Image 1 (spheres, rainbow, N blue to C red):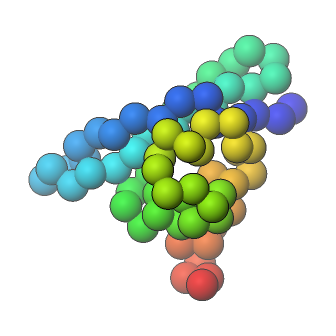
Image 2 (cartoon, rainbow, N blue to C red):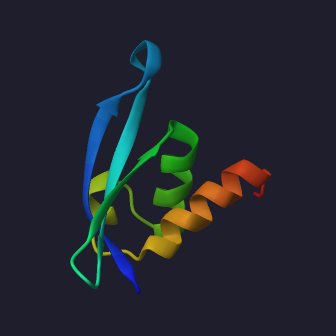
Length: 76
């Protein structure tokens, strides 16, 4: 089952730190949201080659997974 980024919005995390909420829509119609901290959001945008968060829409969920694991593992 594949999923794509269908929406992106900014949100305030703890102590007012900005994060982005990525909405994923699956091929079966299901939806899920993933909160990304600043480092992970920046990695996701870099991996997708986009300068603005809104341009993430349409990219595959694999990009989100790779950004999360890359930041977690400290991979450059």
